[in-house]
Amino acid sequence: ARFDFSGHRVLVTGASSGIGWEVTQQLLSAGARVYAMGRDAAALDTLAGQGCEVLRVDMADQAQLASVLAELPVMHGLVNCAGISILEAA
View 1 (cartoon, rainbow, N blue to C red):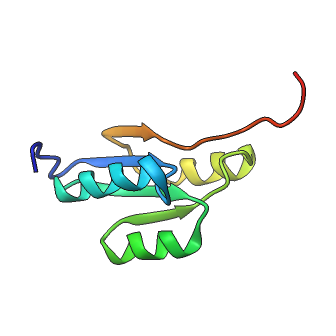
View 2: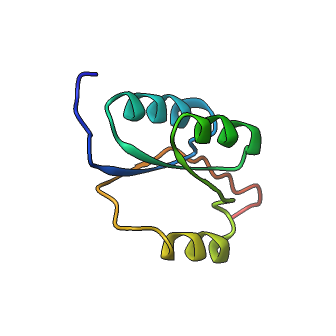
């Protein structure tokens, strides 16, 4: 890996697909302790098998998100890859 993240905890939102998935893979290869947040249970199971701490969370559910975040240790980094769409007129 190009960077060494050994000993660092990093939270990745949207980790179960797309850019979040790839960022998670890169951080794992760099030695990070990755906390992978997403909605896809099967993808999160795969990440758990690779050594991630997985958090199945719908980021649009603010109460659920706050509850999960309150239980996490202090993070050294955050990579926010979750996509949220508002499907109604402003």
